[in-house]
Image (cartoon, rainbow, N blue to C red):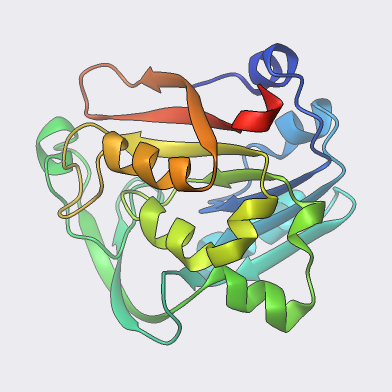
Length: 213
C-alpha cells in the first residue's frame, strides 16, 4: 500500500462502505479499511495456505467474506500459479519479467495448478451485490487487467479503484499503466493519483468515477 488510505478518503471524500479486495494476501489493509469507515469487505486470495492466514487475520472484523479463488477473465482456464519466495507477495500466473532484475532476491519456489474464475461469476453464484462494494482494490502482480475484464458490467457499480500498476514489464505480458488508464476510461474512471515504488517499475494508482470529481 503505497498511497495512504486516509489521505485518499479525505481528499476525494470517499463514501464507500464496502470493499472488494482481490489479491488479498493476509488482509494487511483490514485495519485501514475499518479506520476509514468501511463496514464490509470481500477478500479474494488464491494461495490456499495464505488464504488460511487471511481468514484467521480478518475473522474478527464484522461483515467479512473470504473467498479462495484464482481470478481471471474467463472461467475454468487452467493456469500454473507460481508461488514466490517473499511470503507469496509476488505470486502470479504470469512469468517474471524485469521483476527478476529489480528484485533479484525474489524467485518462484513452486507451482500450483489452478483454474481461473471471473469475479462476475463469483458474485452471481454467491448472490452478492456489487453496489454494496463500491471501493475496489486489486493487487495481482501484473494480472490486474484479467480481474478487471472478469468483472464485466460489475465495474459500472464501482466508484473508486485502487490498483497496482506497472510502467515496465515486471511480469511478462503485463499491461502497462496507459493500458489500464484506457480500460478504466471505458467505465468512466479518471486516474487521480499514482505513486511509484522508486525505479522498480511498479506502483499504486487510484481511480475515481468522473461524475464524483
